[in-house]
Image 1: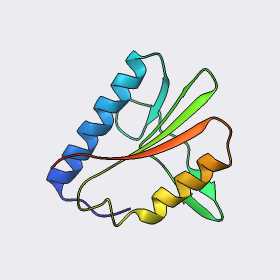
Image 2: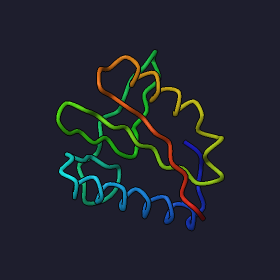
Image 3: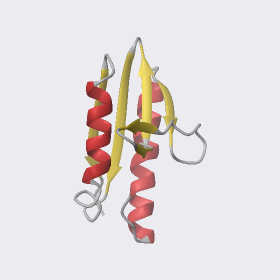
Image 4: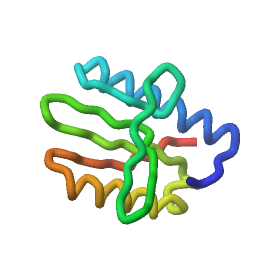
Length: 102
């Protein structure tokens, strides 16, 4: 995980919070790696263990969502690969990487 400035972390956390709230409002069961939510599980692929910002489930579908800042988007490629590979090996699982503005 890339190191973020305090300002970048604030932007990141706000994006995660908004995304989690929107999913919850649309009846998804949401786990998010921010205060006020249960933490999502760590996902393991080929010995790599990574925790996404959000795991949401609804009607047998799973969404793995990772939020990045402009400075972390290129530095966390390995983490994104782990999430994509995990999704490919689990039915009805989708992953997305989103970027917040700083």
